[in-house]
Length: 355
Ligand code: FNR
Image 1 (cartoon, rainbow, N blue to C red):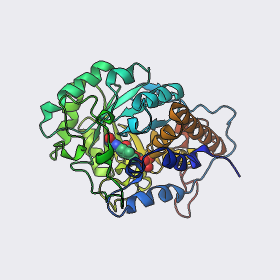
Image 2 (cartoon, helix red, strand yellow):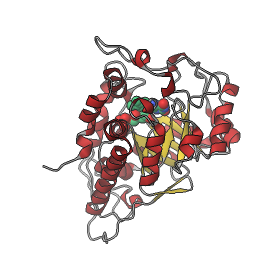
Image 3 (cartoon, rainbow, N blue to C red):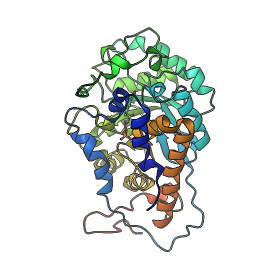
């Protein structure tokens, strides 16, 4: 049997983490229907690979919003990384730098922008915009000054989706340490992010406002609909990020694997398209590229790897994703990630985009 570290990290993390933290990472909203459907949706896609292509050299290098990365795989924003590892986001960023991948820093991080920037990693700031926009400005300006390469506006979280408490154990905010989050917040806030007064009136104008405030490209995360994707790009977004927040917001939403192709069609080549949610192998990453994504982002497996073996664990997990992607690209007749675009087989019609 093939040995995959990625198949082990969740069990290792379960052993390493306090149960409330493990449960917080694992959980989805409500009945966890979207959570459960994420990975099976990638598994359900069928490829129509190419043959008779030169695949001696596979170059996974990818340019995202003008910055070069080693592979089209990034680290999704996740709060509470200091609950997994003493260095938290800093340890994650060191691994990102080593692997040459982008790291998206949660606005609820427990490490400062300066600490993350000092690792040399290319990092993007994820933001939840406050109802009072000006309250978010200091964080935005500080991130831009510290060298963030992009701002990722999480658009699917006007309020936190309901998640049911773990039976018989303490909730995450009962065990959380004040040092795990809020390192870059301008004003001290309560531990529970639910009480932070997020904007419920986000609109296309906020995209331009974020770009103007930071001078950085803006990514809108949490887009599932082609019309929304089109609206984001028309409002100035450099990229749209197809996500349902790992099944943690509205439950019973469509799986991201089912949205990428239509979102790509809606934006054409006028913006980049990223996707996350249930991507558990390099083959899943290839499928995302085939459906039209420029890059994929990974959440829970990298949190688990951080908990299981710190920075070495994250590096090992990223290496495994990369290795699997290289193999999948080669077997699919693709020398570069962009060659994978369109190699999906619609029902009964393999190779429909054949030149
Ligand atoms: C998240 N996610 C998230 N998203 C965001 O925009 N800001 C955040 O602070 C967080 N925090 C967070 C914490 C934890 C523990 C998890 C698991 C997730 C969502 C995350 O960025 C991403 O969309 C999903 O996790 C991707 O799905 P997978 O790879 O975890 O299946």
